[in-house]
Length: 183
Image (cartoon, rainbow, N blue to C red; front, side):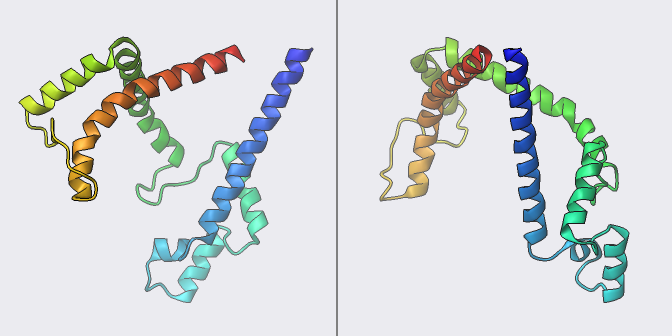
């Protein structure tokens, strides 16, 4: 019984968070300068064209009704039509899902393999070798003070910072994962 109460509390908390985020995003899109009609029709559209477009998409209704209609459509799996490809947004998301999943798996695998099992001095040596051997565009073995040239300083600090952060990022991710699994 306690587990069911905990799960229902988590589900309600998640639903409230998603609802709050959707309200904020919906409001932010409505408050942006310009508008849907200007984006779709261009700056030289007539007032009649804009009014017809607003009526077709329900943009002439009060904002609360627009949000309710949008929320109902999203809850039903209708994410609308892409303005660029003129295809359903759901189909566009599904078409890109394999690439996103593969990239995520590879990034997590690299983080776990490099960050947890390879010591920093080994990874650092490997990075120094590769970047000095193949001249990949970043400085190796030098340092430029930040006050003299900020861009050159950044170029000399990217590699060491990246090598040192790999371990920290993987430890943080592993700790977060363990904490989530423990809960």
